[in-house]
Amino acid sequence: MDFYFDQRYYPEMMYDSGVVSVQLLVTTLAITPLMLIFRSSRKMVSILRWFQRRRRYLGLACFGYALIHLMIYLRRNSEFADVLWHMEDPKIAIGWIALLILLLLAITSNDKSVDTLGSRWKKLHRWVYFSTVLIFLHWALFGFFLSEMLIWLVPITVLQAWRLGLRHR
Ligand code: HEM
Image (cartoon, rainbow, N blue to C red; front, side, top):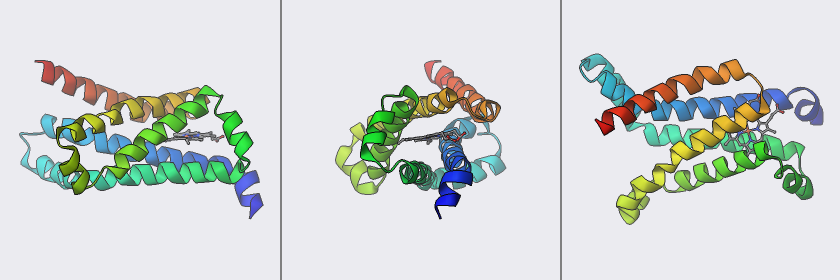
């Protein structure tokens, strides 16, 4: 069992869990700007509505994969002292902060929290943008597969910038 985790599959599993989590995050964030862009196309709007209705689950799945990513990391770094020591490294510390924000968002992704928090719920869930910035920073600082990172980073930055511009106008 250790062979799979430590020798061969650790980087692959870290990569798969991390990237799938990013893909789910970007998909979740792309829905609203795409709805605005394609608002005149009935077919596109109905497809995007399907995603919009399931946005909460996409967000939870993103958190789920991030949690798997952490479990794989902890499986290899099982000493508490090592985990603490690694946190001194900015790329790992940034990953922890991003994950804690995702945790906060995941536990408040239910109807009861929406009712209880009222207008504060929206404000809280805007932290997803900060977490996204941290996640890309975490990825960039490791410096692996940067061209693949850009495939996800560039479109979502353009979409969100466009949406922001639209709101200001
Ligand atoms: C507790 C927080 C986290 C820790 C300790 C952590 C740890 C790591 C480590 C050690 C690597 C390098 C893997 C390798 O050596 O191959 C890595 C890469 C990566 N992480 Fe994280 N991570 C955390 C949070 C996150 C979160 C929240 C996400 C996304 C939602 C994420 C996405 C990624 C991605 C995309 C990579 C680059 C893929 C790769 O080349 O391996 N990480 N992380």
